[in-house]
Length: 157
Image (cartoon, rainbow, N blue to C red; front, side, top):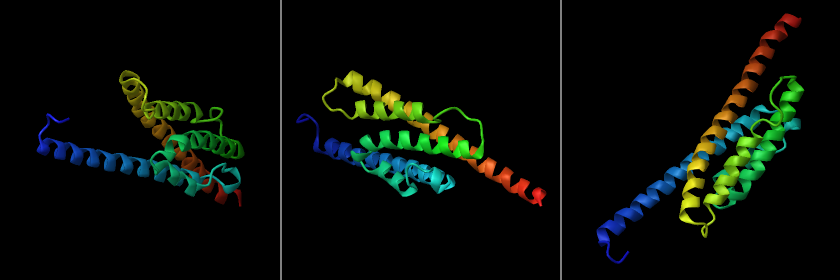
């Protein structure tokens, strides 16, 4: 580090701050999406409260909270789809959510070799995108089912 010019060090620090802000914004958007999804689930089917999704945006705490959200969101989806009598896979989002949580945990262990952390980082990004996409799919399924149910109600009168 001593060989680097002060200007380069300052630019690297500035870049690091920008990257951290972008990562925090992505976590906030993800937490917002999870919260909005939970708001569509009936309160009696929720295993996690919608406002608890914001803990996903808290650095360091989210290492643990990813595991909890993965499990509780899957149970919430399971309960909701069972109530709605919608046929979906058992424990939707649990498998991909756990993969994301484990890869995120491994990436954040500082004494692991760089190669393993790099591999975990690549997997983490891949699983994160897949997990978010899966949540959006099930959110859309709930919204579509709700719209279908609203259309059916006037016909029942």
